[in-house]
Structures are given as structure tokens and as C-alpha cells.
Amino acid sequence: MNVKEFYAVVEGNYDEAMGRLLTEKRIVKYLRKLPETGDVAGMNAAFAAGNWEDAFRFSHNVKGVSLNLSLTSLAESAAELCDTVRHGAPQVDFKGMLAKVNEKYELVLKNIEMLEDA
Image (cartoon, rainbow, N blue to C red; front, side):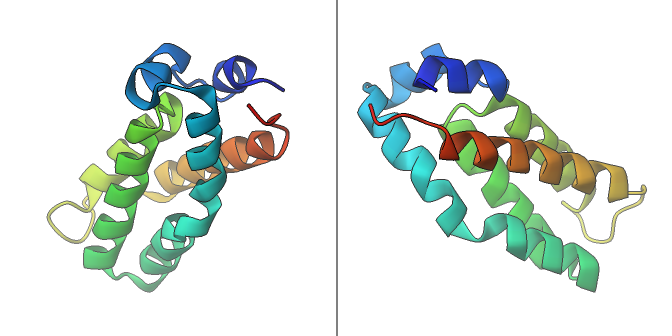
């Protein structure tokens, strides 16, 4: 799978990523580092433990990294989740939002594995 196909599958923005990172080689380099951040695992653990400060921090990190890599769909899902814990304990049921972030993240990871070297 090439980089442009990757962005189509994960509902990202190829042109925006190219504008920010300038080369497909650099995009692939940073996409491959995404699983190393540990932010999604930390986010899941924080939500499970009811640690709202860490839940905010980790979901905010997921949103930021996704925005920087132009992973639009993942970033939008993470932003929605992040906003639920911005001021502490969520006032709405967050489980569906959390599941959506995890689903989008898994889609990204699965497709990163199929990326060709640029």
C-alpha cells in the first residue's frame, strides 16, 4: 500500500500530511513511530481506572499526534473523547467514544503494517 492509499483507507488527509512533513519518506517514518508512543494504552488504562487527569492527558496526546500526522478521523474521535474529561469526571457516557478511538487507532495500526517504504 502506498502512502496516498493509506490516507484514503484511514480517512486521513494526504495533502495536509505532505504539506506538513514534505516527503512521503518522512510521513512513513513518523507513522511507524506511532505505536511506540503508548498513548492509546495509557488512555485506556486511565479511563478504566477512572483517573480523569491521565485520561485527559493521554487522549489529548492521541489527538495531537493524530492531527500532526493528518489522521483526521482518529483525531476527531480523540478530540471528542478528550473533551469529555477536560474538566474531570465525564458527565456523559464515554464508553462508545472510547471504543471509537480504539477502532480508528486499530485501523491505522493495521494499515501502517501494510505501508510500502517510501
